[in-house]
Image 1 (cartoon, rainbow, N blue to C red):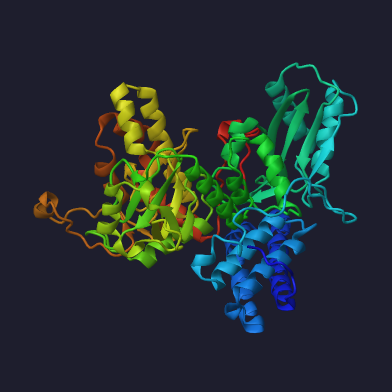
Image 2: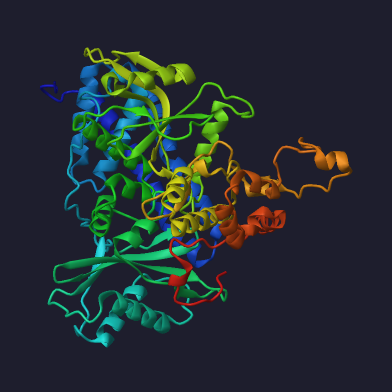
Amino acid sequence: MFPQRLDSTLAYAIAKAMMDGFNRHYRLFRTESARAQHRFETRDWLGQQRAQRERIEFYDLRVKECVMRLIKEFGADDQPMDVWEQVKLHYIGLLVNHHQPELAETFFNSVTTKILHRSYFRNDFIFVRPAVSTEYIENEEPDSLPTYRAYYPSRPGSAEGLRETLLRIVDNYQLQREFEDLGRDIDYVLQAFRNQFGDVKLSANFQIQVLASLFFRNKGAYIVGKVINGFRETGFALPVLHNSRELLTIDTALFGEDELLLLFSFARAYFLVDMEIPSAYVQFLRSLMPRKPRWELYNALGLQKQGKNQFYRDFLYHLRHSTDKFRIAPGIKGMVMLVFDLPSFPYVFKVIKDYYPPPKDTTRELIKSKYLLVKQHDRVGRMADTLEFSEVGFPRDRFTDELIAEIQKYAPSQLEISDRDGDGTTEVILKHCYIERRMIPLNIHLQEAFDAGARAQIEHTVIEYGNAIKDLVAANIFPGDMLWKNFGITRHGKVVFYDYDEIEYVTDCNFRRVPAPRNEEDEMSGEVWYTVRKHDVFPETFGPFLLGNPVVREVFMQHHADLLDAAFWQSHKERIAAGHVFDVFPYERDRRFLSHALA
């Protein structure tokens, strides 16, 4: 029940302090995102990676600051519930004409749930559903950037008119670094447009719309927009990179939903984008990629807490409109994680077990630190993003008895079954879990290819597996356990790593050759007879574990034999330690306009 009147000045003060806390957070978030352009222009690649990593921590820091202020200044943790009901209503009033209302609601939830007891999480004290629409929010401030700009070639049907428009689009971003030959690059883009659209008739509404801010990630800047012609809309992206002469080039042109989905993949680091109205960016991007969930777009824009909130709402909605049960996930069981899924829902749920059989030597805290490392790192399209939840509740009647027994056996400390909310509904409460997009494990994918005699599929899988490892190495990641079962394949045929409990930085590893045997006894020994220290890695020993199948071995040795050579790993380690940032492209190398070397 909502209060009949708003008569608490204390409630308004608490609401105003929370809004001040959110506004401070988003101001700092946006400032850091806006600085990405200067780092790009000055080629500060390590600074760009550091900013991507540190910005992820902004949200939790601002929530903690706000909680401490509310408790210290207002005694918020001792206020009665009628005050908290009014706090929410006052906060809703403060959302009117706000440019980030959905983010501010999520911030309110984060702060409130740190103060209030769990039993209030689902009632009128938090935003279970959005209270304010994000449709048609406009920035009325003078000299403010629009969400996107629309360009109309001056002479429809003329290549010259389109060429001038494309030049103006690039020029309007005012990059403070010279292009090597922008006219040449625009000619390449024009040819790519012709290849994509052919000799179609241009309609009266022919236009190009581009988002007003560049998208920065790692060593690239991306122009993102769409071409509208009649009833057809086609999304596109133009990557802008530095070449070996420290000049800018447009590297390629990406078109259509499938190529943009790879650019905005859940397996890549978050973009740095300066946005006044993030919901408008999400709406624009959804028009380019209608199959991509809204929550993944918020994540891609660096707003991962909003993405998590949106995901949970989507999850609850799915539960209300489905009847199947959570089950133990198919496949080989892991030694560290207990994995379960809901067949009708395209994600898996992972719970850290309470104990780990030898030879695993780890702890819950160490495993969580590995997952945090991945969250903060450049995932280069090869490591799945995860959502981390605590104290999450599920209906007990949606769990199979076998799954409950499995959790009770392997992770009893993480399980509670109770009527926590006092409404007569029995819940399964997990103290902590990770949620990832479901993928086909690579060992299962390979076995299906063997069973079908699909040589081409086998070759593609093995080549992609090696490419994935090399991309991870370029990002300073050593996967640790490289067994096929720890990798999955996406719907786009990309191989992605998803088992993080043994990952290490490449620069922390010592890559060695297996020493020559000292005598015949060493040579015939079934035991390791040489000294192995922590972080020692012997790449030549990977083969027996990975390449038992002769077809797999043949393909692997043809394309990736260097992965079995310590020199490959050591050379990458040395270059990374010297400050070099490798190029990892979110598109195939043969799509690039020029074969120039990049810096």
